[in-house]
Amino acid sequence: MSAGVRPGFLVALADLIARDVSRTRAGLARSAREDLRVQYVFGQGLYELRRRELQPTTVHLGDQVVSAVRSSFEITTLATDARTRFDVYVGTNGALAGVPVAAEWQPRWWLKVALTLQESTVP
Image 1 (cartoon, rainbow, N blue to C red):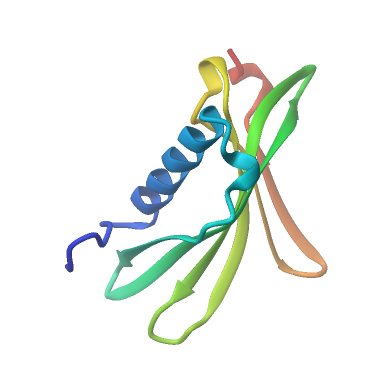
Image 2: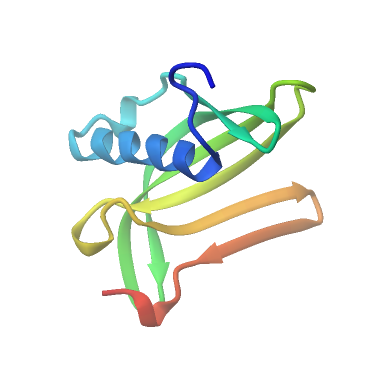
């Protein structure tokens, strides 16, 4: 593995999420248009995870409204240039700071997968 290449998708994602939460806490989220990229390996392939956009928002978890940041990501398979986009919503305050509270992936116009932190697990 080359220097800076992460050992898997979740490690790469956690790295970029930690950077975004830090930027949000520093009040820099609204101006975060720079291109954050990190490469990672999965199986025998090399991939690149790129954060495309960062936007402050809120997420409704049951009766609770959580301050969050929406990070839009794109995965590129470096061997084929195939691309996949998805969004992760990460809490920015309190016990949920740095915790993914929701995620969305829409591979086709007619299919959208949305995951949300279960209400009973919200502190």
